Image (cartoon, rainbow, N blue to C red; front, side, top):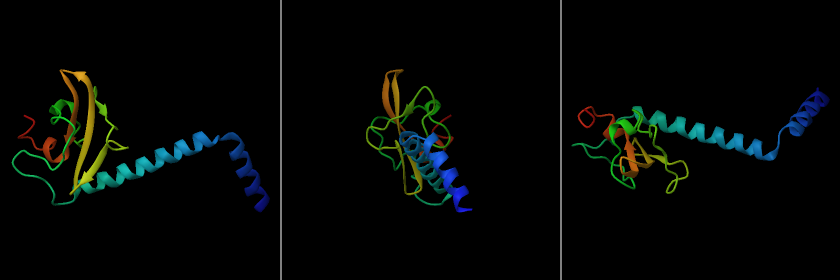
Length: 124
């Protein structure tokens, strides 16, 4: 049994470069963290009142069509990783994301937040 395991692991090591191995590991780690963050969206508390947000984006809040319902940037905007490695974080149960809109409609950077963009009153 040990020789079969050794042969299989050596074959896998020969087919996989360190770069791709660690790249996949980073993808798995990011997916796990994003999944953990998504699980906090259903928790109570932490949501701001009155149309504001607990998030502090690098620019104004993104237009509602630039954010998905989970608070993440929607195309043509992409996640801005200048300030946070993943571009998103969870604060008091609210998902906050920095978005880079590449100057679309004059907006370079903005923020998407679940406590603002999930409220229909803010996004008619």
